[in-house]
Image (cartoon, rainbow, N blue to C red; front, side, top):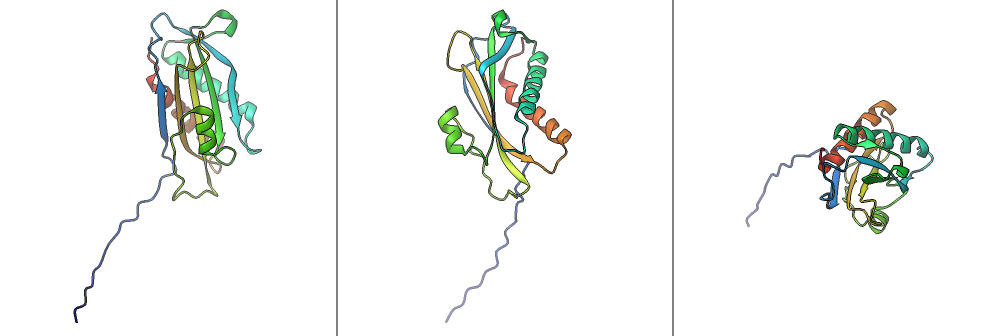
Length: 177
């Protein structure tokens, strides 16, 4: 009779709640040095979140974060009445309020960030969509959708800083003019 024994060592890799996943689609080729003004899309500024989130405050912060990144690239914010060269729209959703399946249906793309190994009592998956529109077209010319985790135990200031960094990363493909 033969007995085989073996010992296997497996390293446990801690899943980081700080990771993000991002997917981009579209073409920013319509932007040139002449396209320097942008305005907010008239109907795409949505927040789908529970009672823990002040939606109006999130919209204002998102507009500030987007404006800062766009201005750093040479663009300037104008009113929609001033015939902007491009329109920016955005949406934010928490995983408890909108599933990946619903996001895919509404946005046409989804990064699919896994919650495996994440303490869902402390962290919640969030999704952020930014869309760039040529004002002459109904459909967005370019979209980016990012998913990451928000830590409600962090201070508001820490969450805002991380969010600002995410917005900057998301708009990395938008050309400087």
